[in-house]
Length: 393
Image 1: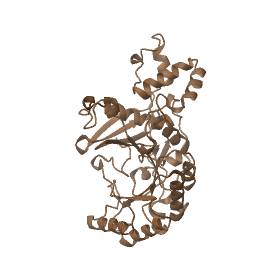
Image 2: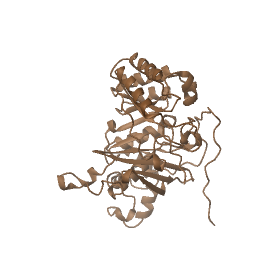
Image 3: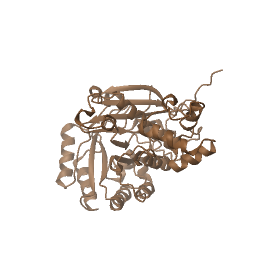
Image 4: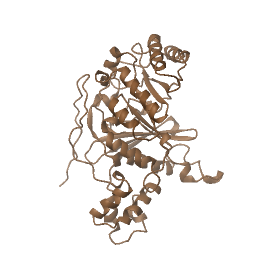
């Protein structure tokens, strides 16, 4: 008898509806990456496994990116498969991988244990590899220009489900699936595995990471902790994006992790932002900017302001001036603005700003002394760019 996996609801949220509490679904299997190293050892004991085996398996998973029990020859052959299955249950099933930008961008679509779908995007740039990961299946913030938000929230991801996206991408890099990976080698004295690692991770995929705070922060710890506890990434290579959950921003500022905060603002005035970013009905523009400034003061990390430029909606020069005034009122040198040409989504009535209007918007911000860089749009032809992730198959 076969058991069909449940499929996510196709009901779309009502306009402006916010969803903070994730729908109840079956919990993801507990995985080694859900725990820190001490927690793994305690968990292993609960499973009847010697604690030092958790350390061994951690080295295979976080250093070698291996989950195949047959490759873990330092484990006893008898019962090896059962031991590994207990500590590393499968979390993501690859559904498909799409390539864009001459192979320099890969979008990976994964099915979770309960049939929910998530997407992540891997991008190679000169000198670095950046990955955009998901923290939720769907999103409850309901921004009307975002395909993920319009689909609604299916459920939160576990810490390990978030981490496994990065591990899966790192495997793809080592296999040469991303353009440029095969050519990088140790001929210049570097280590092949070091050259083919994910260097930057942005929580800008599906979901509002601060609405899934505990799992998202756990994933950050797994990303930055040294092997075998984690992947050993630099915290400065991690960016946490939010639409403006002020309590979450303040909580994150107190964690002592020097990652970058990205605030998805999209409008400097409350009247428009109430429509574009419904969380603004809870915490207004000034409250979100004040929290972002507090984050800078606590961490010393310059904050990014994300601003999707939408034709004739939020791209007026006076809005650029208003944004510049609001940012400068909170000091100088603490913020950077990333205007983003709006990426098309199915059924959307909005489109990207005209090139000349975009240029004028940038120039007005620069005139206010605000560092401003138009975001490079990657993967739009495979629905892999900002605001396009909907996990469709």
